[in-house]
Amino acid sequence: MPKISFRPARVFAMQLLYAMEITGATVGEALPGVLEAQPLADDQKKYGMNLVDWVQAHRSELDEDIKSCSVHWDIERIARIDRIVAYIAMVELLFNPEIPTKVAVSEAVQVSTKFSTDNSGTFVNGLLAGFMQKRGIVVNSSKKGS
Image (tube, rainbow, N blue to C red; front, side, top):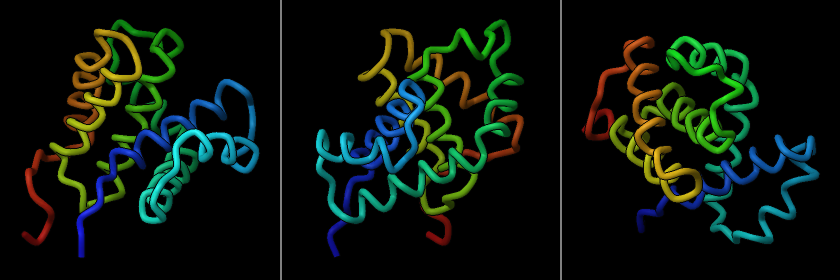
């Protein structure tokens, strides 16, 4: 079975969460526009929707984690894209043991660098390092069971 890339799913989740945040739309209201802008394979769409569901279900907990890990940064001052990209990586780290921690962090850094500011990758990397330390998440480089 060919291996699919989950980066489009992460970008899709970021775009959907961003659209919902800036417009106040529900998933159902924002979804058609985001899907029109970025067609996805079924597996990518499913994974992206899982990420969105996990973020929505754990948003207040994730905000508390960001507040405790972002010393000298009020959460409202963090760029929306950076915060959303961090949310996505955080839920991957918490709820998807099939994604290696290095991959979740690397993807977050690359996506934030592409879609946010020049310093976003470094900021998101540091934020996720603090989150992983706080949560006791150990860096692994391969899938569990491998």
